[in-house]
Amino acid sequence: MNSQPKLLKEQALGAKAWPFEEARKLLARVEKLKAQGKKPERVLFETGYGPSGLPHIGTFGEVARTSWVRHAFETISDIPTHLIAFSDDMDGLRKVPDNLPQHDMLKANLGKPLTSIPDPFGTHESFGHHMNARLRAFLDHFGFRYEFKSATAVYKSGAFDAALGRILANYDKVMAVMLPTLGEERQATYSPFLPVSPRSGKVLLAKVVRHDVAAGTITYLEEDGSEETVPVTGGHCKLQWKPDMGMRWAALGVDYEMYGKDHLSQAPLYSAICKIAGGEPPDQYMYELFLDDTGQKISKSKGNGITIEEWLSYGSPQSLALFMFQKPRTAKRLFFDVIPKAVDEYIAHLESYYAAETTDEQRLDNPVWHIHGGNVPEERYPVSFALLLNLVSASNAHNRDVLWGNIRAYAPDASPEANPGLDHLVGYALRYYEDFVKPTKVFRAPSDQERKALEDLASQLEALGDERDGAVLQNLVYEVGKAHAFEPLRAWFGALYEVLLGQTQGPRFGSFAALFGTKETASMIRQALNGEFLK
Image (tube, rainbow, N blue to C red; front, side, top):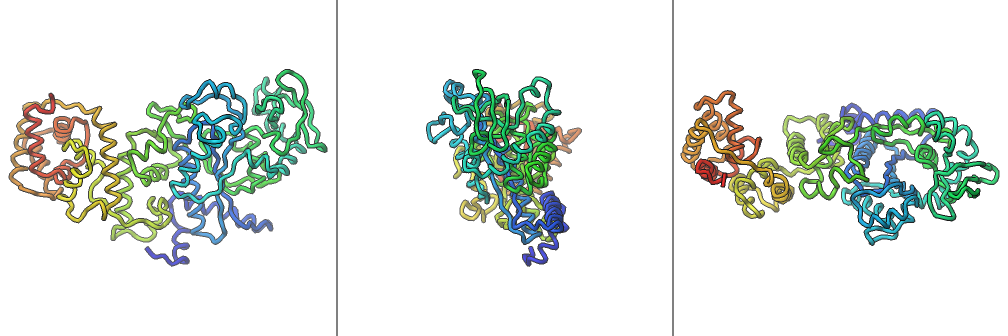
């Protein structure tokens, strides 16, 4: 691909991939600010994280997607950029997540800021510090460029004090924005400020009875009904989450932020509060939510869905990134069975990127260009993940050496050293098969028609010798199916999968036979015909 910066910029300005569409909108925002005499020194991206539960893939997706827009913007503009990963760790713990240890201890600390609650895992200074460390570990693992900020640290440092003062000075304006969105009962006690009780240490949803702009304080009703006065600055208060988002945009000068669909109805409130706090609302992008295997929204507190660690046990980081890149505004089911497809789709996009007929403009719209920040690796994958899974199944392999023996016979130039990505796939396939494929395998006996066709196929495979051309073998499979009058022909392929592999679907059977070997495939067929898989 042509790497000349000027030409690359011209091509990027016309690219259709969604990060470039977002980058062009952001560039238009910058030009508008320049016209108003507000030339920005840098463009600030922000992502938010609620550390009340273990980080899940949705959190990764937000940072990854924001980073792709950032890189696209850097491709079309010379303006410096910065990304803040902001943790709302000053929030009070409202309920105990189902998937965490020490429930009784956490329950005893309900209401306190996450950074004031002991770490249930016993490894960090607090619950909040532990979750923040988990967040940073996986952001670092993927090589994201970011600055981490803790709400607790920022509030206590005074960095938000000026913006908090403006919220206090415009208390009635903020209430006018918020009250119409609340029910009658909530309106009676609502305040944008949540005091951190100097008595209990809890973040209180307390009724504010007075606010003093000159003194910079609020007076609220404590849990026992008595009055308490605290400053709104210095970490003595935090804002309710909706005003907090808008205040933060203003205080930090955020130019771009993504959020899930569950925030969409609240976005006008965030923007209104941002303006009250003296800021310009950022460009915003809504993405759809992820669903678990039952169609329910994934949740940190429920622990449904997949963790980062779980995905990376069965699929490559690139496959996870691709899953996040594709159709961010479409709700997607996020469970273990999506991993093999994502792995093979990444391999297909990589092949397409380096195809001779692919133009430079088309490469900018290829997901792998964005996933790899423009530096796309040249490694090839002679074998798909789906084929590897079926090879594990058919060979009953339990280690890499056996699988690599088949791979080398199929692709003599392949090796773990020359194809490290493929070597990783071998490990993923072994684990995925053992945990998800093997427990669900159900073999069946062939019908009379299927038995005759399978006997014919086995004989013809044996007659071919060590044929490794998948197209030749696939054509043979087709011809055998036609010769034995399968109608429709897909019923023949269904029989191959169900009788030989114990599953309802699989890869191109010719490609599988080329990888496994014609002799080995014929032997597998005869084993099935002898009923050995039904024992």
